[in-house]
Image 1 (cartoon, rainbow, N blue to C red):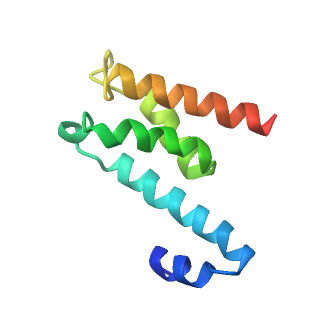
Image 2 (tube, rainbow, N blue to C red):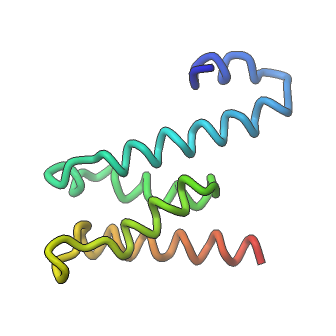
Length: 99
């Protein structure tokens, strides 16, 4: 199923919401994972990282951990300080919600 198919099929069907959330989490995670470094300073990136806290899954947890910790050349972070901070905050919100 594609995201659009699930979206259209979800009207009036509560079970489809979970499928949509899982698919959205996967799409967002893959998008952030494959985002070129040159585009990571776009205004929408920080908001997308923030939205990962609303879609907790193994995919979003993995990408948030990577954003907050990933380094290139051992000492240089792969993501900006702002993105790393937002990813760490999103992880905290997920963990707090999960107890």
